[in-house]
Image (tube, rainbow, N blue to C red; front, side):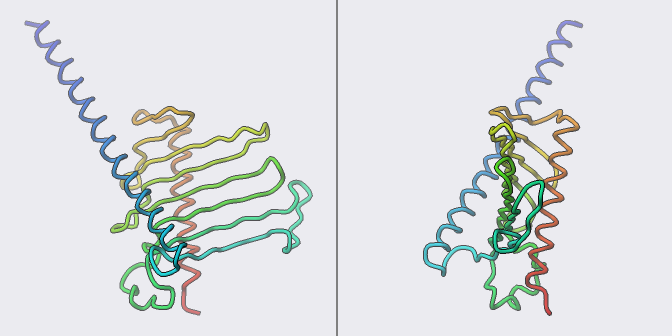
Amino acid sequence: MKRHILLLAISMLILASAAFAQSIEQQVAKIREITVETNKRIDAGLKDNTQGFHYAAWTVGGPRDGMQWSAVGTMFSTDEFYFDCEPQNLDECETEDVKTLVRKIVSSCKGAADLRTKSEYYFAENTGELVFAFTSELEANGKTTEIRFYFSKDKLIRISQSGKNTDAKFSAEDTGKADDQIQSAKSLRENFARMFADE
């Protein structure tokens, strides 16, 4: 009898684990659909300037800016925003929070040879919530580190690094990195809103 109960409990745990894994896979598949569709609309907009998402950029530094820092040389950073509203007709979108119009942000920083970072953030269309973040960093040894973060309702559901996926039991380092991505995305969206604020 005890053995039967133990086998039943193990079976239930296996089924629950499989259901959890399937649920994560379904959420990740949906997030991938969002990123693919977003990039398709961006490409359409870049081709003919009438379809897809609109584009704005915020650039700091660069060779003309004279921002010479002795430690890293000339710094150059760009934040690119792809959003779903006519810039000339923001009044039509006034009922919405301007920050929720952003669908993708690309943030990059370049300095000396050993300083290159790039982050991409994707947001859901209906809710404006962060669903995916991708970071790429060139390390001093010339190796590039890439990390992918998948989110649901501001909670980390998967982190992918070095070909390995982690879906549960995230380390403190993983959750710290994910929180940094959420805060960076929030800050960038605030910057976007400032670009279109009334003077």
